[in-house]
Length: 181
Image 1 (tube, rainbow, N blue to C red):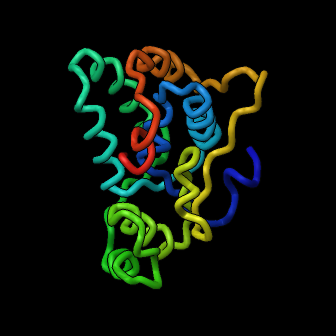
Image 2: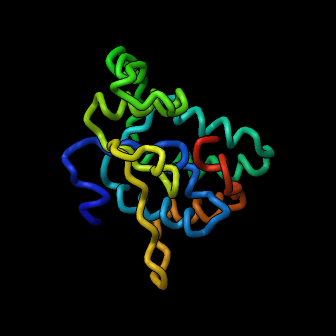
């Protein structure tokens, strides 16, 4: 695990783009997102309740058959990994609404998430180019997985459930795993 990924002494926050990135149709995004979760499996991450809901909203748009293949992995991951699902508090919201706390040009959902991250002195992890919109803020895109390296694996039975869940692959492109999530 590198210092870029964990061990900063502050909470590691994740967004829906990173979580859903594990099922991206773009293998570079998929493996980078998966690697983050494999490396953090024994640690703790924080995810706002809104971001959890955004993930569900995307998945519920797919067929029941694909959901039945996806959810056993997601359910098991949420059971074995310390993912603290937290609502916003007043200080998070005040900071999100302040033009000095979060950039006013960002979508409101991103301002709320960043208000939570900044207020709690955390670091938000996301995927790919999404982090470009957050220049100067406590946001980091997960690193690309090194070319030629074998894909990281979850411990069993999580890896088997993950492989089965890949029947559902999410589109990439503008809005698919970034501002649209």
